Length: 388
Image 1 (cartoon, rainbow, N blue to C red):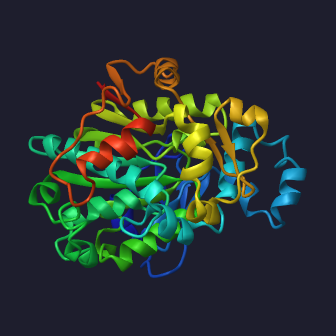
Image 2 (cartoon, rainbow, N blue to C red):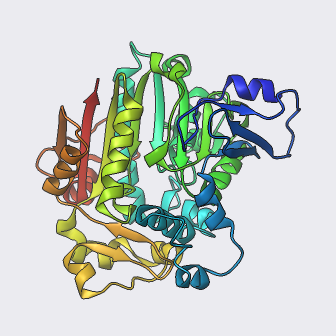
């Protein structure tokens, strides 16, 4: 692929000042080398390599690229004079996710191999989103954005529906074949599949998985894995002609280490959805935090991935989970999520819990109706808002 083609397909703006970006040399041929992009206004430099963009702001990128072990970075407080409190908390999250991507995909995300405590919840999110898209794509051209894409769960799932020869093992598996089957409607009307995650390791691994699953041909044509921070992510206006669906699922909102970052994430999702789109958010219900979350959900496979729990009494009282690897997870009530939506000035929303979530049929081999009621509804809080 030539950089001139990449420039044509460049869907993002500078996260520092939201201005346009240009590749420094538009006539280069891209193989495995790293290409630089420069902001046309503030001159910030970003990069493209191995099939994905790195759009982390320069001062954040400088912190996570500094040589030295995690303990020294924490001791030095991430050069506190250069970073705001929110930026420090973002860096903590980025560092916590290092060296985790491969194991995270296998133990937490894989559609057939992950721990059931995680897999069952993700299966409900999968069919909830696919059911929503099934109706939407009948008469709309759509851009899908995963805010907190990790190792590319939705990039693979939705890629399988536009790539007839992709994800063959999942298309052949009786358990996953219905969900991962090719769909002409998706191929025609799902124009862009974008994944944003602040962990470059996660995004790099998602790119490798896309190639492994036969979706490499769509990289930076229709599937866009991007290292970036959702709170300061900006899209080009060229995508405004499509209807945008922005999702933040599997507790990603609760992984933001303070309430300001949680509200800013929702505000950014609203901005990305404009001029017309839908926001879908899924978090864990704090009613089950102590009896299920600390005991069952973070079982052997999940703990092997994210680290042992090191909660204090105060953490448990506030439904916050922390691990030795630095993972942070805040669980919510329906009221908590509603308050965050209000602070983000999101209107026309509905928040669903076990009393209002509806079973989804047609995917019984993937997730039975009784499993939805038993394993999912008691621990799920789902918010959906239409933005215009």
